Image 1 (cartoon, rainbow, N blue to C red):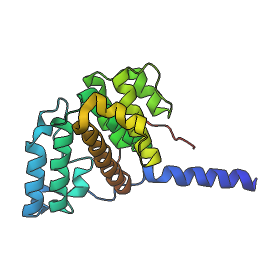
Image 2: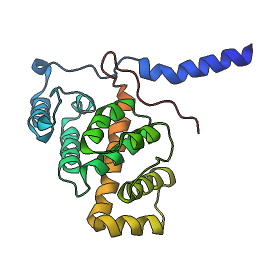
Image 3: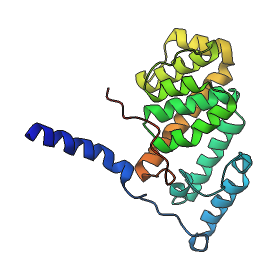
Length: 213
């Protein structure tokens, strides 16, 4: 009985952060400082505004970043570079972001980028396997290279010579750096989302199952 109770308590403790209220409530425009208003305008008026289906709200990691607008502005500029001006093809770039979301169990990050990955042409079955923590089946050569590079980087903190050479041969030295950068940037995004406890939209179920490793 004690073991069962302890198991239930531990399970509840794992679930509580996802259910807890956002630690950074939205800031009304009239309550923003000039620096915060400038950051909000940069986010709403930048290339993200052209993304189909975007509601142009200051959501996701951007609302927490308003608390440090100078840092937030540098981060959003880097994010725009890595999403809209990267040398990595869109489907593969979004795949790298989903790999990061899965490694960090960042529900909002996955929710926000899964539809973008699908729109860019990433096979749904590849994303579905990744969500379950499996090596995706049916990957083409480019997708396999990205999966191996990003997964090794996240899990091993380095990449093997063979994996590095494969990524370099396919994407060039710039592509290798772009893969590293997009992975690291979205770790920062996932850290922000998880720490801030940014919730999913009402009625949206968490898309990522818990993984026990």
